[in-house]
Image 1 (cartoon, rainbow, N blue to C red):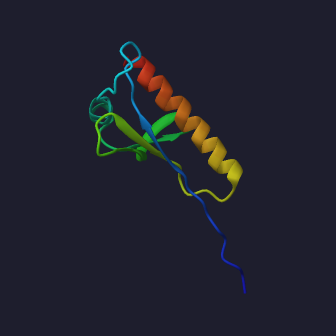
Image 2 (image 1 turned 135 degrees about the horizontal axis):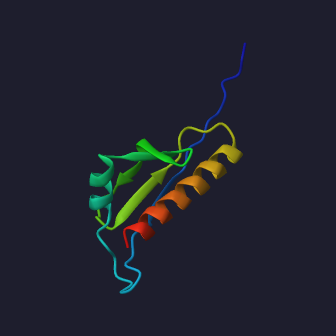
Length: 92
């Protein structure tokens, strides 16, 4: 009998801050509208699924796909963080 394999996923929440005023900034609405809904970073591209709006418009939630190793989680988080940082920088 095969043992069930364990999986892991990680969610992170970030507040979007205006780079000049350091005030919270409503960013997620414009971001989500430009991408047509929740998105996921896959091989440097955005796909439906893993970036979601939160209760506050200045907050964004990142979530990894279902992973089987800590290495997969680490790689997914690094890629998602880098992509979201680039998008925020591009949109001011």
